[in-house]
Image (cartoon, rainbow, N blue to C red; front, top):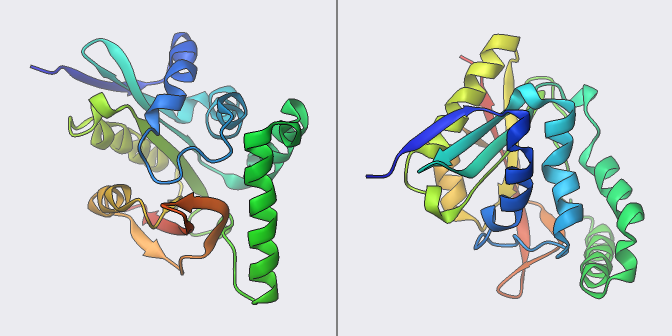
Length: 216
């Protein structure tokens, strides 16, 4: 029988979470992004562990780290995704890496085309009704075990504890499994589904889906 534990993050978990980061998103549409694990890690995982470890939670399956949720309770006090991305592009010289350069060039082209067409592009949500946000990733072994529900409920408890009015998350509209899970956890779709510049799934452009949850 599978044993599942969900709990707050501890500093000793850091190396394990960094190690599982690449595999946690495996199989999800667009999960490869610009194809450089270290820099992706420094955008979507380690800043949260460094700056807001009290808003991080882990899932342990049969004694092994198998997933995590990291969050920020106040966007205004956390570096934006654009700031984090700019920093890693410079640090890792991503435009000198073939696979990464291909992604960013494609993203720039998509953004230009959409601007000409006067169509919106994906971006972070800034709304005082939902000042908090999160990222969640689980290894395949943890899926269907209740681990995702567990870390999400710990996050909801955290939001209530700090008095946050609500949170948002952003996934791809093409990731129907994730969308269904978040809906089951009480999130609602917010806004339209703009194109995510650079991202592709089965050769087609991908679309951002923003979802919101209001503290009860």
